[in-house]
Length: 146
Image (tube, rainbow, N blue to C red; front, side):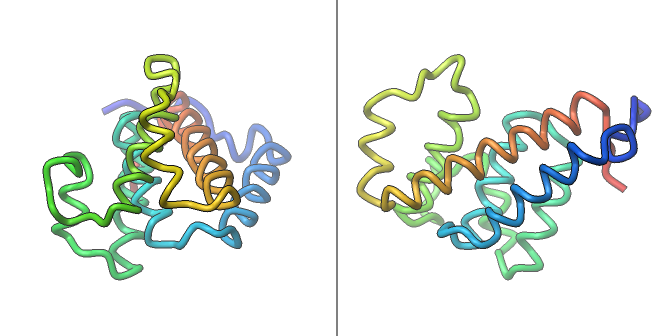
């Protein structure tokens, strides 16, 4: 098992304060909490962030999410467990998380747009950007689940 490279909370408290400010905005945003946790979990899976996968799986369970749906997040396309809105959000999450490869094609945009208002799409995109940043801190500095 790898050891933590550095404690980013201690090394730059101002940066972490800014990230927590962003999270406070996201918590009050138009994206419902259960969906936000699915998005955080899926981005963290893609990015291979063990700390964040562990945390958001646990947070989703505390919020009432089922084991079955959480286990199926990695294969959401192949299961009947997710609503059209959730599927659109998960696809948007994957496309934005992998933006260097996907370039967020029009067909993805055309599938997300009917399920979200402009404000919701903006808030969802901010959420995806934030979890990707947390993933980069945690993966880059080897933050481990406890």
